Length: 92
Image 1 (cartoon, rainbow, N blue to C red):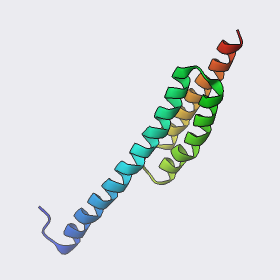
Image 2: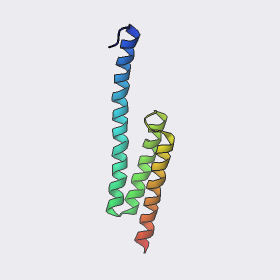
Image 3: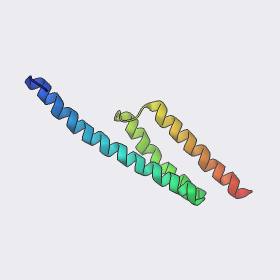
Image 4: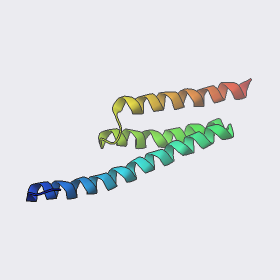
């Protein structure tokens, strides 16, 4: 248990940051889910739009320290390639 005033304050700060980070992570997951749903529907335009909307949110997660830069880069790359593949599959 925290004994000093400073350690008690750090506990309060950590709890507050945890709530903020949890909300931000949840928001990012929602954007990713929208991309996944658009991909599942087979609509490339909707998937591309959803990905375009998700990218700034993912980047914001990096700047806020919620996600690692390489993790976000990997997610965006994989989603973009799936959206692109959806277009070529629809053209065939």
